[in-house]
Length: 476
Image (cartoon, rainbow, N blue to C red):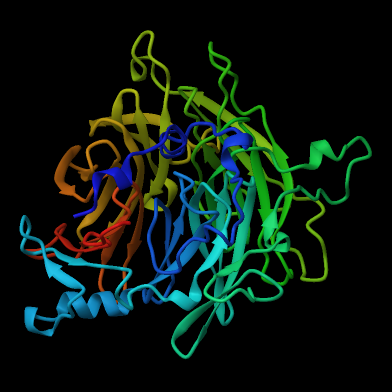
């Protein structure tokens, strides 16, 4: 068992996991990085997940939310080996795996004393990393994560050598024995390079806004969108593979107004129709019962030799959620948004009250704009963190991650009901879905420092937790 003291969260950790502001003074670390370097082979407050297109590797952003170590990290988990362990019978499993006494169908595996984490792939990043995304590129990919402790958008190139991922985020690897490479300044986006720069812009105006948090990527347009918790800004990223490094090329606020307490946030961001250069991108806030939208001018990627001079964020229509959505005297808190049916349905996750709202976002022929009409409300768990939508032969399913309950709730929006509840571990706060070679969901349990592997294949074990990685580790 994991000692309870290990997971006694500090005030800083609680702020981080709830998506609240963290002061720059508390997000740093006074000790040297080398003296308390993060381990290469450990999960600690995992906060972001991304599966590579092959389905062979799961990348994890460790947030280091209690500042136990000098850095957060990016680690690579071998899903091919995890699949083999799940498929093997009791006699074919190594000593670092046991069967759960409470749930005999769940395999518990120690990540430190196994080869599930590819230790040579670990790199060090800043503290309080959040959402993690994988952008495919020729010969590999690029990992991109919003890091609140810097603040920055940190990135690392991924290539595969001898079947193992190699993460590159520094000009030279660390020369200190036993330590992972630290991502250097060239791999941390900390400023916005508007092209051409406006004559009135000051150095301060071009700094990356604080508290980068939400992250969405449009692979076709090679654009990225970053939300900022404490300022309500959105930052636009140029992610073209022809560039030597990704760039932040625009940022804008004013999508929401501050609430009565003076709070202003931008939280989740998602394109309605990825790949559409004229499409709307939707934006939520934890402090407003409203959905904002924006477009990107000159969204199509220009030739490799040209800069994206005309790409700017342009506010679009906004719409208020129904009055009954927020109880009198309660703050608005909209956590997530995702689309299905080619953009004609939106699923919006609220904490106050806790529910999934189903919106008709099909295009109105008269106006040429999405209808944005509420068609259903489905009650879910208290304190939901985020949602993901999966479309398969069985229909659309919405997976709601429930931080406080330690569960994932499975919603069938067609039937407007919850069809399953999955116990995952303490503090689930991220989910990634893999379709091949076997459909599975991976949930990062922030408090437990574990990854739960959930079966998504139709059959008797659908929605069962097949494996938990990290459960049996005895922390010092």
